Amino acid sequence: MSPKETILITGENGALAKKLKNKLINLGYNIITYTSQKNLFKKNCYYWNFKENIIDVESLKKCEHIIHLSGYSIIKPWTKKNKKIMFDSRVKTSDFLFENCFKNNINIKTFISASAIGIYNDDSEIEMCEDDELGNSWLSNLAQQWESSSHKFNKIGSRVVNLRISLLIDKDSGFLKKMLPLFKIGIVPLIGNKNNRFEYIDIDDAVNFCIKCLKNITIKGPYNLATNKKSTQIAFMKKIADLYNKRFLIIKIPEIIMKVILGKRFKIINSNIKVSSKKIIETGFKFQEITNIINK
Image (cartoon, rainbow, N blue to C red; front, side):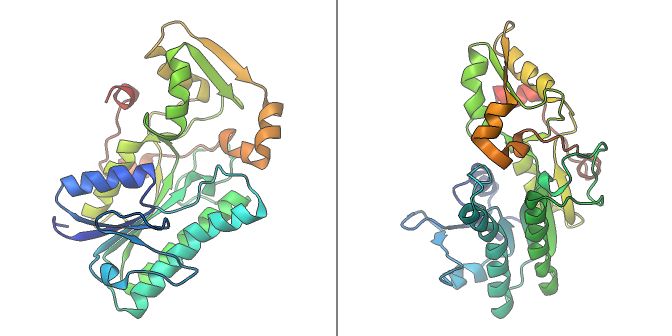
C-alpha cells in the first residue's frame, strides 16, 4: 500500500476514528469519513443513512480501503430500542456498505471492521484464541453477526480483518478520562471482581495496528486487540494510580449498587474474558508500556 490511496473511515466522531484519521493524513493518505450526524460540515466528510438509503456513491468510488468503526455505544441502556440501534449501527451499516460496493462494481482492497472481545464467553477459564469457540450471550451474538456481515466483502475480493477490540485506554476519552481525576487525588475505584482479568489496549496501539493491517496484506481474519501485558483489574488500577500518587485509597463499589444502576450491562465491566495476544504478536506488532500511555 502506498500513500495517496484513499481510505474511508466510518464512525467519524469516535475517539479511535479521529486519531486514526489524523495519523493517516499525516502519513500522506487521502481520507474520507462517513457520519450519521447531519450538518457536520467538514472537508471530505459525508452524511450517510442506511434506513433512508443515503450514501455518497461518488466518494465511495474513490476508495481503495474501508475501515468500518461506526457503532452506537454499547454502554447505553440495553432497552429494546437501543439494542436495535446497536445492532443496526454495526451490522446493517456494514451490509449497506457492501451492497453499494457490489452494485456499483467498487473493488475494495481491504475491509477492516471493528468487533469486540465480547464475542467470547465471559466465564471461560482459558485464554481465548481467535479460532476458539465463541459465546452465546446477546453481546457475543451481536459481535458474531457484526463479523459475519463484514465477510460479505470476501465476495468482491476484499481482504477482511476483524478487530476484536478490548477496552480502549485513552487519557483523553472514555474509561481512563473519567478515572484520571480520581487517580490524581489518590482514589482507586474498583467495580466488580478485583481479580478479574483486565483486558485493554492503548488507543495508539489500536491506531498503529489498523495501519499495519492496511500495509501488510498477509494480515486477515480476526485479531484480539489486547495488550500482551496481562493484568488483573486491581493490578492495573494500582499501576495507573501509582504514576500519580504513591499513596492511594482503594474503594470497592458494591456490586449490588452497580447491578441496580447498570442491569445486564454490569457484565461488561465485570467481565472475566481472557484473550490471547499471540496472533497479533506474531505479526511483529510491538505494544506500548503503560507509562507511555499516561505520559505521552
